[in-house]
Image (cartoon, rainbow, N blue to C red; front, side, top):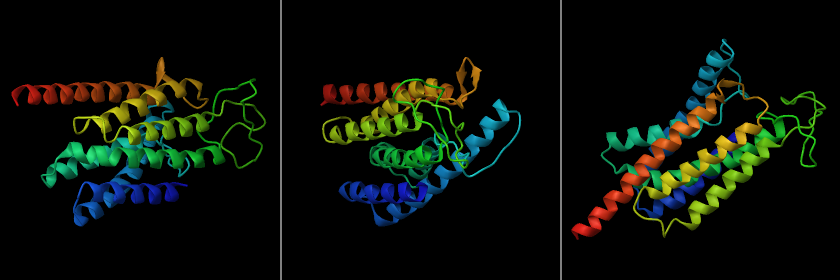
Length: 233
């Protein structure tokens, strides 16, 4: 599913990048860099979490932290933009829908394998994993948190695609997308069964709050700058 998610994200990126008239060389390099850095970020986030929460380092393919992917990918876009003297905000607007599409498809794998499972649940919406190869507790009804993540990612993707032409100024679309993404991620993680708290909240939730605050700050700055530009003109 990670491979399928990357392929879908690349296709969407090609479509959006052509509309923004981004050069082929930049399209190629941004595609390679964001995908590579995203997986490295997911791995590093997994190592950091296991060392802080579990006091040990465990590296597994199924243990990759999905929330590390967008963080590293956005950082790589920023670095690439600075190195090549490209405007960062248009790239963020292009890359955000692609990265969220990746996360949505990636979550299908989470649903199937049982990682990112929920707390015990006695509601009709609960799911039960019985396959011995599952990463979720066997035979125990739990919240379908992987499905919650998937549905929320799709909802955010649809929202920002609908707002793509109307939401101004440049950069606000990407920032709004990540505010919505991390806000939903923060709430859903209260129902996760594999989220041990660090300081009342899990490490991922603390990260979500920090990133929401940063995104809101820059979104306000973008709106202020656009407002000043209109006044000056």
